[in-house]
Amino acid sequence: MNALPLSLFPALNASLNAACAILLVTGYSFIRRRKIAAHKACMASAVACSALFFASYIYFHLRAGVIRFDGHGWIRPVYFTLLISHTILAVVIIPLILITLWRALHERFDRHRALARWTLPIWLYVSVTGVVIYFLLYRLYTPIGMP
Image (cartoon, rainbow, N blue to C red; front, top):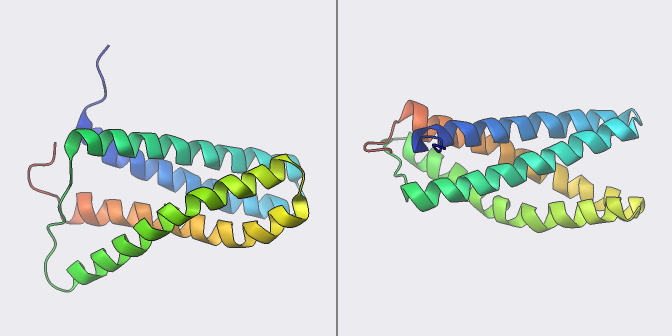
């Protein structure tokens, strides 16, 4: 069985981030309308997308190494500011997601809701900026020698 070509992973990862962002917004809209089952399904799917993204991202970078940004001029500080905030919040969001999920699964909805007010916007930011970073790094400023 042949593995996916390494060059497909950045687009796959961006797609998983985009799907996660859509699921987060949809799940939020469901809970605002008190459609609890639909909210649960969206949020569980968002967790699954994020987990698949994380595994795919780690696999890609273990195989491909560091991919250098080739943009110059004003876009360079913009890109790195975005990348730094994305990376820091991507680390922060993991325990927030896990704790928020644990509270929901254990029906601690008051505490779940209180933490979800922080988790949702940070998770959404990480998902959306992941897609933006993909477009900057792989589409607008295509890296030289990308596998």
